[in-house]
Length: 91
Image (cartoon, rainbow, N blue to C red; front, side):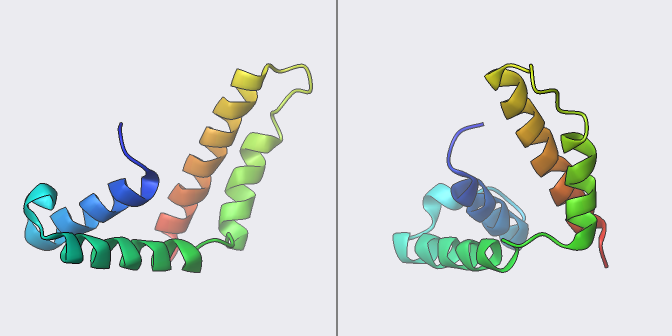
């Protein structure tokens, strides 16, 4: 997938609002406003909840010291996915 996570989130937010992918047809000011909203959300969720930390801990618990750098990157990506999934399940 291409683009920064901020851009991907902004495109998803715009698509959610309009019902179709029209990011490229939005005027630059509207795109920037959506990007600002996404950055505000990321700022708000920077600190994980207890449930997110617990979910991430499950992945970290399985990390071996002899693992390769690529393996650690995969573990970090899995940790992020598990933590975000836990956040999405919270009410």
